[in-house]
Length: 228
Image: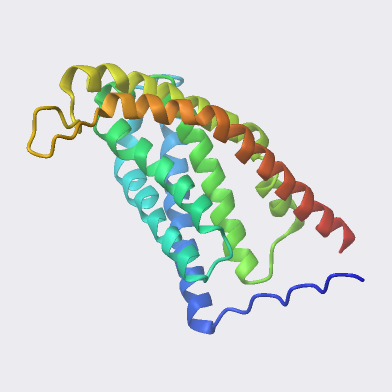
């Protein structure tokens, strides 16, 4: 006996309008970041110095705004898993604020442009795909790009993120910023340096699982498109 297909999820008009607006704003924001990055490398070649200053404000704004996607998932207006959405957004926000924003030494090294290229191209494609999907107007080429570019971009982004975390370690080892040291009235200790190390080590088991999950998604989406 065949399993009946789930009824397609129907969004209310206000929810749909809100999601279209949110994704349009994010698409425009990330497109601007992509433009600023391309402009930097066009004028300065492979020199990384000054890249952070070019993209800092829009990157802080639009990547931080992604926390709304956790709310979207939790409230059910998008079908994404809350746990996966939280993990993905948290990892980006963690890289953005205590690593890139707070530690200047992380900005002029090779890891930053790697993660920036991966993030910007991924997000421009993702938000454009979401907009057109909400409008039921996704062209086949965009769907293929959305579910194929990650094959290269995901490892590039992970590499850049790990390099950036590594470059932040000396700063936190010396300053002990965000650490809670003994003695204190709570009798509690927390070392942010070792927390970063643990985050880096977590990439070892998490990366293959997420990468494999994305390949399964790719196979499912693109095979369904061929059947259609």
